[in-house]
Length: 353
Image: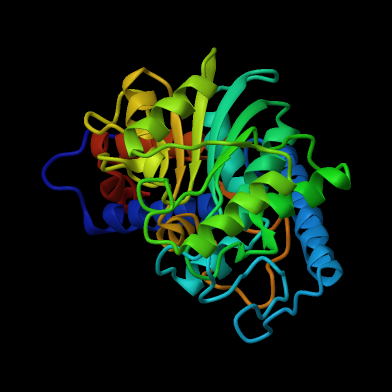
């Protein structure tokens, strides 16, 4: 076989091209479905979240609260009223329906595992009444991962949240603890709303929230300024905090910070006076569950799903991978063939044969 001279022949190019296509098809067919990291914890957290949702739904029956089958088509009991005396601001019904999906717990597991928290670590948590389903998903994940939360809740809610005066988020939480589903409870609660002091609510609405805090036996956080509300929370969160979790648009958490939704790296937030900014600037990771529809789209969770999606299905639980070993083998084969065709005049050799 003599060394190749001049341009590579058309026949050689066709052979190399055909081989490349065959190897690519073989590699594409090597795709297999595998479990994502932390799969079992995700399933356990989502299943616990679903059981908690069922408990809340049963509690609405016990409270003689009718379920709105138009605005709560999955009949979860987690979707509140459009208006009530404890409603603080406008809310997106689609976002509330999207949040009432137990598979959000799997996403929260992903976020928390990113922070490398370990069983027994203390986690600071800020809830509002606006997204009770997400609050419950967080509680379920904290239990599955064996973390120790310090929970502070702003009780008031935007539209379609836990805004029934007789069945606030604190009442939902109480029902879960009563059924031994969740071992945690809110340590202290505020009225919430603008400046976290109920500005914009009627005196009747503020009184209803205070009654809800008292009937659930929870410490009342009072103040006259937003700075005072933040300071009191920092005092309650004192200790070795490994992570801060915020759900909803609480003023004390978000004040002055342009905080993205999802996982926020330590020291990522450079400005702001709220809890997210303060924890981030102190080098503590943050999980910020806001802008729910965009968060769902980013992670392939359905928007306002009907019916409720099944647990354990989708990109949060499974991913497709290609065989790396097979790809390397095919690459070696292709490199050898290319070397041979570039080094020797195969067309000439074949014609001489």
